[in-house]
Amino acid sequence: MLALPVYVPGARPQGAMVEKLSSNENPYPPLPGVLTAVTDAAADLNRYPDMATSELIAALAELHGVETDQVVVGNGSTAVLETILRALCQEGDEVVHAWRSFEAYPIAVAVTGATSVPVPLTPDGRHDVDAMLAAITGRTRAILLCTPNNPTGPVLTQAEVERVLAEAPSDVLVLLDEAYVEFVRDPAVVDSASLLPGHNRLVVLRTFSKAYGLAGLRVGYAVGRARLIAGFRAASTPFGVNALAQVAAVESLRQRDALLDRVDALVVERDRLVAGLRGQGWDVPDAQGNFVWLGVGDRAGVLARAFAEAGLLVRPFAGEGVRISVGDRDACDLVLDVAGEFLAAG
Ligand SMILES: *Cc1c(COP(=O)(O)O)cnc(C)c1O
Image (cartoon, rainbow, N blue to C red; front, top):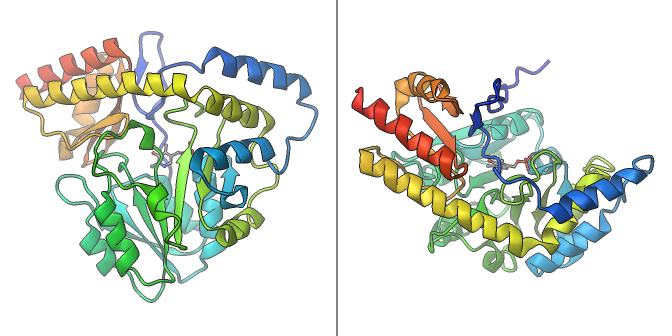
């Protein structure tokens, strides 16, 4: 049995008064049209879903301006990532990624038998592109880039990703995880659509779990060159996206404008939260996702407990810091109250 790192999910609320800010979920419920589509589709749950996921894949291809054979879907983008790494890696291979980053990465690498090569972030929570390029060896099969980085918040820039594509050996797959791309407002952010046509080994990962608010249904996808995607599709679990998830994702794409209005509102709250925290004296890295990072090191547990006492569930990373998801206005006000008192108490 492999010794796998354990995925620690964000804490679940215990009482009625608790606000869950521990899993970067969307605080809004699904749009009414999405709920109706799911409820209607539930009448056919005795049937298998569309194995080809045709409607969803066609909608995604249109959204991204690519061919349908350039899209692969799965049970959340975590599952898509696992499929890709399984297709790519075997024992002895290496996958380079930043650390601290998304905690599913070391697990997804380890299940393939390959070795994770974690490269520490810079002090301001960014990918250290120099160090990541230097960590590539003859055994490296993929480099995994998380933009914006979960849990710290900054994006990778166009220049940084172009540099990775120019300098990493041509047989190294470049995986760009854009789980929070809809929340990004930094104009320097990488524009993956501009890079995909010219770079055969670039694969972009997206999810319906964050901006689209469908975390509970599990839909994610990857976009890349058709030949690569065909291999990933072949390695995917058949019927990997369930019937309700398929209709919810298709309906969400139809209502993308309404969903993006909600994203705008969350971005306003995020920026207000960051400004408020900085105003109190906190050192907050650039926050481009729907979360903020307080890098308090050894005090992560103490700070998380202070939030919990106020009814806020946040995500501590022992010895590193605390990640707080952006909730509604009241939740952000409460975050600011607790954070301010914590600083004042020293
Ligand atoms: C939340 C998240 C995902 C999405 O995971 P799903 O399996 O699609 O829910 C992917 N990457 C990162 C960095 C995330 O934070």
